[in-house]
Amino acid sequence: MASLDKKEESRPKFEITDGALLPTQGNNYLINAWKLTIIIAFGSLALLLFIVKEPYDKIFTVVIKGAPLTFSVTAGAILGSIFLGLFTGLGQIARTRIINLIAGVYVELIRGIPLLVQLIFIYFALGKFFKLDGLPAAIIALSICYGAYMGEIFRAGIQSIPKGQMEAALALGMTRSQAMRYIILPQTMKIILPAIGNEFIAMLKDSSLVSVIALRDILRRGREHVSRTFLSLETYAIVALVYLIITLVLSKLVAIMEDRMKQDVK
Image (cartoon, rainbow, N blue to C red; front, side, top):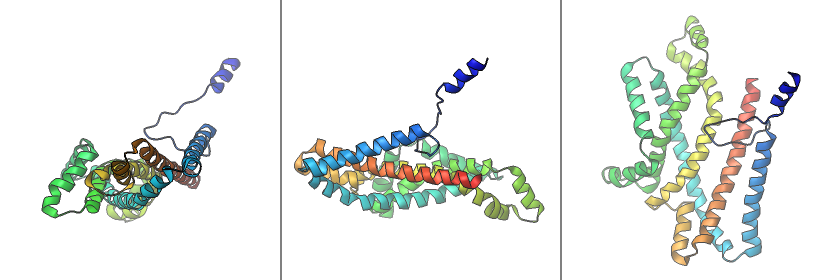
């Protein structure tokens, strides 16, 4: 029996998750994989820019000018989605049936429509009535889409707090809204911050879809450069490397934040 136990312990353990694997301090395999990937990404970009140079240095200069707009759209949308997600999550656990239905319909409706369709609809269809420019339309579309997913994150985070804390707060004389504001939500934010970080990374990648409404983000500038020079392989290689490096750096920051949250909980 002892030998069987040792064999079981020696077998590699796998974890199935619903999101991207992030580099953490507790898993050497993930750390090595992240380091190897970041070295390959930076090494490839450095090779193209400083060794091969032409035409990659010019392409990079053009493409990187779209980074501020990409981050602007992502930052605005993450704030909007958190705002919508908070009220959606609260609506899903509310005692009023009509509020439950409204929040539930919003989540099911938005999650059932592709983001690209929502983006085109808001910019081209609703834009005629509300006269939306490209940047506000992109932020609104991403906020509405990711707000539905944020609502599920908030709902799960709130429900993970022991019910006894709400009961204790009510017993101390707090109203339900006060208990939610001062007791439940602060603890919920600590729990869901890593998940919000993952959504931020996913949103940054999905922000490339705003190029279809003529916003000059990283991808749009790459597409414009291709239309002028017909260097599609070279241009999209630089675009892919830029997105990869940004995503890898952000994933590391999210992993560090998650580790610190776990230490605070302990």
